[in-house]
View 1 (cartoon, rainbow, N blue to C red):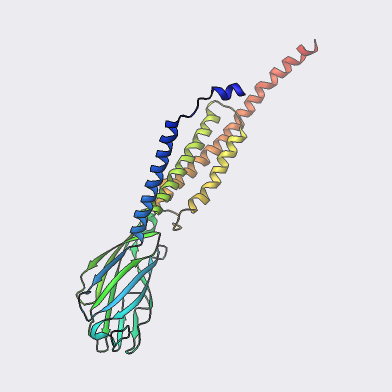
View 2: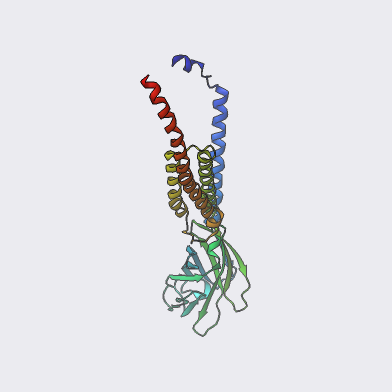
Length: 304
C-alpha cells in the first residue's frame, strides 16, 4: 500500500494555483450572473407627467405574476397629490377624486377630499401561453387614470416596480389618447428560472442516455437478468417525476419541458427497463440451460 501511495505523482504548486484561479473565475461569473438577474427583476421605471407641478404620483408594485391563472397582482400605493391638487402640500387630497384602472373587479377606488388615498390591490389579466414554459412570455398593460369629481382627467405620474423574483418585466410607454398613463409590460421568466429549467431538461435526457447504455450493456452481450442494472433504471424512472416537478412555476403537463425532455426520458428509460427484464430473463434461462449439461457431465467424472 505504501509503495502505491509513493507512486502517485504529487500535486504541484502551479496546478493548485491554476485550480484556484478556475474556481475564482467560475464563482465570479456566477455572482455576476446573479447581479445581472437581480437588476433585471428588481427594476424601477417611471412614466407619465412628472414635469407637471399639479400632478398625482402613483407607485405600482408588481408583487406576483400567476401564469396558471393568466393574472398579475399589482399593489397601487403612495398615491400622492402635488401642487394645487394637494391640501397644504401634503399627501391629503384637496378635493374628491377617483382612481381608475384596467383591473379585473376592483377597477375603481374612491378618494375623499381631505383624506389620503388608500392603497389599492389590483389584478390585471396577462396574455400568453403557459405551456411554452420555460420560454413563455406574457403581454399586458397598466392603465392608470385619476379623475376629479366632475370627471376631468388629472395628470398622472407612474412609477413601476417589479418584486417578483421569478419574472423579469420590461415596461414601455404607450400612447394614452384618453389621458392618464398607460404602460405596456413584457413579462418573461427570470434568467435563473430559465437556467434551472434547462438544466433539469438536460439532466433528464442525460439520465435517459445512461439508462439506454445500461440496457445496451445488458442486452447486447446477452448477460442475462442483471438486477443491479434493472434496479438502477427503475430508480431513475421514478426519480424523474419529482425532478420534473421541482422546476419553479409548476408548469402544466404538456409544456415544452415535457415534450423536449420529460416524455422522451420516460419513454427511453421505460423501454430500457422492460426490455432489460423480459429479454434479460430469456437470456438468463438460456444461460442456465447451458450450465445444466456441463454440471451433469462433470458429476460422473468426479465419482471416478
